[in-house]
Length: 189
Image (cartoon, rainbow, N blue to C red; front, top):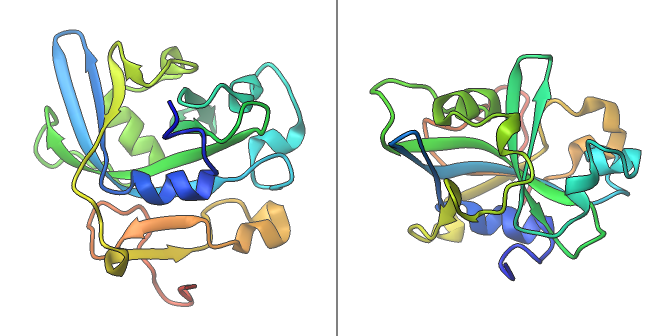
């Protein structure tokens, strides 16, 4: 699990192009990760770990290489990969994926809620090790730095300066990115 035991921003970059695999009920569903967001620890006011150690956030504090799945707005699941050293409270949100296998044509996987719905990810997957047993990551085609774009995270305006941190990463020109840059968007290096 040494891949995950690194800073969230490093893992967020390296997850681009990786394959997220869910195998359950005789089905195998696979997406290529095209968009991520890093949440770097308790000091990051956009990170759930900033609220401290609670029953909900306990999984964020390690060990790395586990799934952190939570529900937002009472209806959408979000899938995260726990990262960094045990005790840090960091994770990477997987925001978008390109369907590769086992998903019906036209299914939308742009956005964390749609991605989880398409893959069948729910609270039942929270805390699972990402080593197999129905939920794991596979190495994919590496993504050249020239194809990686960065910008502010989505939906965390309450976090002040942390909301503007360029911790959202995506593969340029992917139609499976949740929010492509638009009017008023300024890409950061």
